[in-house]
Image 1 (cartoon, helix red, strand yellow):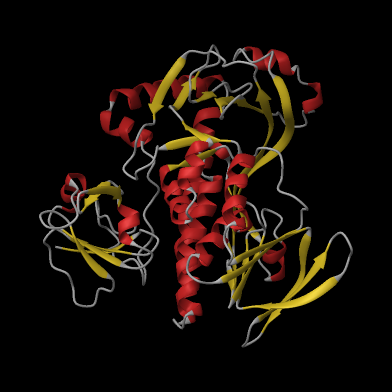
Image 2: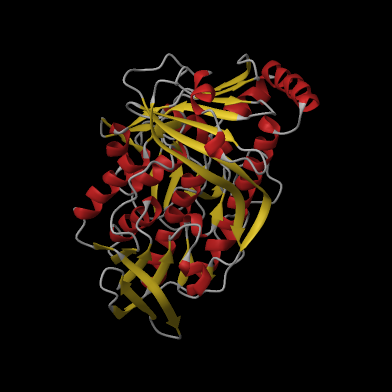
Length: 472
């Protein structure tokens, strides 16, 4: 059975690898003749790295990325308003990693080249699709020759970005969740390390909000908000870069971007489904653009594989039901934090300083701001959680400490395997729970961290590492 993935960017290649690891043949097509050579995404959190781990490329990604120190908020004079550090999280990877997107795409392409179940055709675009009770019918066009050919697929995944052809062909449209903003994004190369903080610096200047960050290797990125009607060609770029000591850096690329906040109204039409930017767009203020798409891929791959192996098609209804509210929550959070960090005039700057001082003095708020966990999934067929369940692990990722199995240390996900699993520290295991049972503690998996987290409970873990249910 073949799945066609439209779009061979990071999300498309990742979902192709995840599906191939479940025994499916995948054809990935992309309208561009080669991977996009310029950096776009630069940040991934530790939850997203577990998706790359499932695709078999996390260790290779670590070699081309670097841990990020955290977020520092500055006022217009460069004074620190607040600092939210990042370190080693509960998911077995750095809480935040910086990278250049072409490096990630090279890692994914190398993995795809080594995977016999995946074929990539670049310079090929989707022009039409139709479906009835059987396979999806597609028309693909070779952009070099103009030749068109029909093909069939058991399913089609639209990972083709903000201007998604797949979304248009299934009649979907994007709902705005906030106003769009124009920013100038400048990628830089430095002949030597710059004497800057090794994290993200956000300048909370109402007149000219800006962001500066080391990426990886010799690369840095600066971003400056543009005023309404402002022409970026008229900016004195060296002067803007001078506040970060980067005025001597070589400009690799300077491009205007519109930071939009949108979520698609429709993620599925029978066996055609959306992932990544085709389904949602977010401002960059919490660094979740690519991470959201990777979560889409992880949570959809096992469901689609199960349906193609004979499970009820209704399982695919949970794709939008789970992912859309989660994406909407993070997009709205990005909009809110963007306003808090960069909005308003002089009165807003005074209020911002007072609020951030309160956050610094309140340990619980500071810990929350420094955390990297995303919101839990809503209750549903695959998330058995009461609507009001403070502290419940249901709907979020199970932590991934290092565990010992027969004396050897390994990551938890590598022990859980690709299917459902039950982790128990002596609690009751309901009879209707699927998956193999893994016991934690004496005679089982050795992990003090996991033993403390379980607190005598049993948890049901989905193939995407989301906790589906808990029992004492």
